[in-house]
Image (cartoon, rainbow, N blue to C red; front, top):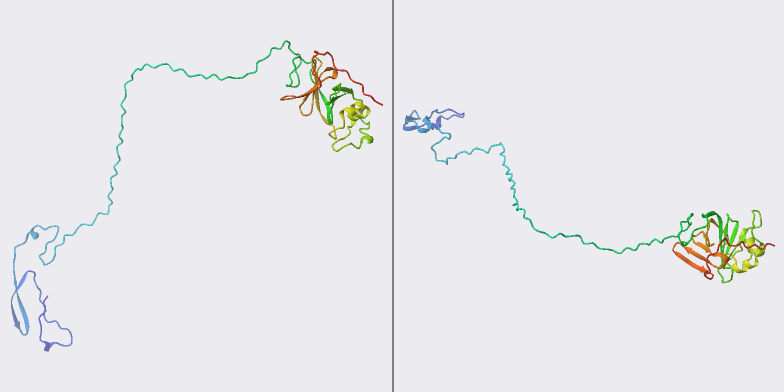
Length: 306
C-alpha cells in the first residue's frame, strides 16, 4: 500500500485519510498525474502465462525473491527405533573320533607290601579250669581251687608293711617288708562291735604322720608285741574300707586284692609275697620259692591275747 503526500496546509489536527489504493500483484506503474493535489498512479496489469508451479504444484513452494531458499527438514519420528540384538550362533566343534586300535599290553598286577605283624602266640593249656581268675596280671599257670570270693575288707599301711582284713574269712593278713621270717602271717580277728577301738597308752606316736591302729588291727597290734615291733606304727590315721577279693591257686598261692588295684600274691608257708599291678610285677618280698607246689591253705597263726 502506497500513501500519497497531501498538502500540509490542509492537514488538520486530527488524522485524515488521504487516499486508498489497492495494488494488484504483478502490476507495473505506467504513469502518474496530479489532480487536485492528489497523485494518481496509473496501474498497468501485466498478464503472464501460468508457471509450472501453478500448473503442477510441488511439495515446496518456490518464490522468486532475493533471499535464501530453505528446504524444511522433517523432524525425527517420536516412535523409538528398536536396535536389533544380534545373538551369536553357537559353534559346535566336533572332535574327531579316532578309530579303536587294539594294542597289546602287559598285565600289570598290584604290588603287595608284606608288613610284619606281631601277634601273641597262644600257649596250649594242659587243663581247662572250672573257674576263672578275678585279675588279668599276673596270670598263673595253674587253675584256681575255687571261684573268687568278694567281701568287705579293710586296708591300712604301716612303717614296715601292710594289714588287710578279709570279712568272708574274718581274718587279718599281715605282710612285712623287712627280711625276717615269716614274710607274711594271717591271724583270726577277735574284735567285736562295742569293744574299745584304741588305747590311751599309745595315743602319743613317736613322730608326726604316725598313728596307732584301731579296732581289729589295733587289738592285734596292741596284744602282739612281735607284730607291733616288726610292722611299726600306722602311716595313715584311719583304715581304708573296700571290697576285697580273694582266690587260691591249686599250688596254694593266695591272691589278695588291694584298694588301688594292686594284687598281693602270698606264697605258702609265709616265705614270700609279691605285688602285681596291671603293668606287671612291682616287688618281691622274701626268697623265691623253688621247692615246688604246696597243697592246702596256709595255717592261721593264733593271736596272743592277754
